[in-house]
Amino acid sequence: MSLKFKKSYRFAVKSSLYISLFAAGSLGFLMYFLNVFSWIALLLFTASVAIFSFFILQFRVERFIYRRVKKIYDDVSFLDTNNFSSQPITTDMATLTREVKKFATDKKLEIEGLRVREDYRREFLGNVSHELKTPLFTVQGYLSTLLDGALNDKSVRKKYLERAEKGVERLIYIVNDLDMIAKLEMGDLVLEKQKFDIVKLVQNVFDLLEIESSKKDILLLFDQRYSKPVYVWGDSEKIEQVLINLVMNSIKYGKDKGSTEVSIEELTEKKIIVRINDDGEGIDQQYIPRLFERFFRVDKSGSRDAGGSGLGLSIVKHLIEAHDEKIFVKSRLGHGSEFSFTLEKAE
Image 1 (spheres, helix red, strand yellow):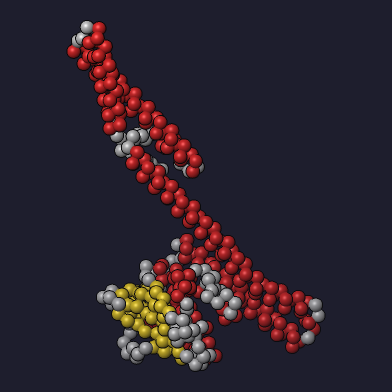
Image 2: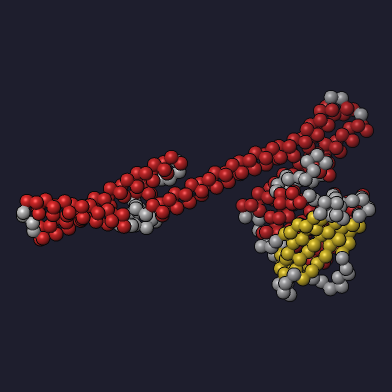
């Protein structure tokens, strides 16, 4: 920490003036009483006392303040006093007070930030443990049952092996998502940006998720007929993953026989915005700020049954931000949700 205090001489000047006036008055009275009065001697004595007092006071006050401030910083156990000792110390107490208060406030915020990160780390590790433990125990249970004798029953063997395979697939899904987030956060994921038609990409996503949507009789549709391509600039594979995650979420949490509607609108001369609307259960406002946190779930119990790794929205946010774009959420409990994100237009 580099401290740049304003050096002030006002205290030393005033104090030396008072001392020299008192000394001059005392000496003048004594000289007058002894009948040896001399203006020259009085003035020289007064000037000498003033100069001597000024330097002594300035030096002593600086040393005093340094020790006091040093002790304050030592008490909070953060400041390297070696850095502080090389700085000129001020006798301006307002500056000192302001700087010390600023330091204390900054350190308090830093400590609170560390506590928040520590809580987040514990929560994250607990979530990872839970997400991995469930499929691992599932696979272990089926394999143990087979090894205990069910292996000889062909019908049971096939069923249990298929279920164990699903557990392994879920493990792979979670690990891949964790790997994706790690790469995004470390900046190791390279985007291959190109010009592509966002309308066609959305239609491809609809085709991929048609079977999933049919299970709940959810209709996937555009808000209107797009007769012309809408070209954007970005990594088409990553934007496809964004769309898959958002549309899949709308299917998971949408109501039966409902719909998911995608609209593509011009936001500015250089930007378009893609909106994904559903008529599902919606999200309580208190949960919206945490939606993009890793493993955060609004419904702690039922949402795991819906499948997924709990990392989908976090990945979506990272992928959109990797494109230097923005993602938004609007939702009303019981009235559905809208997720939207921006993309750069391409000619």
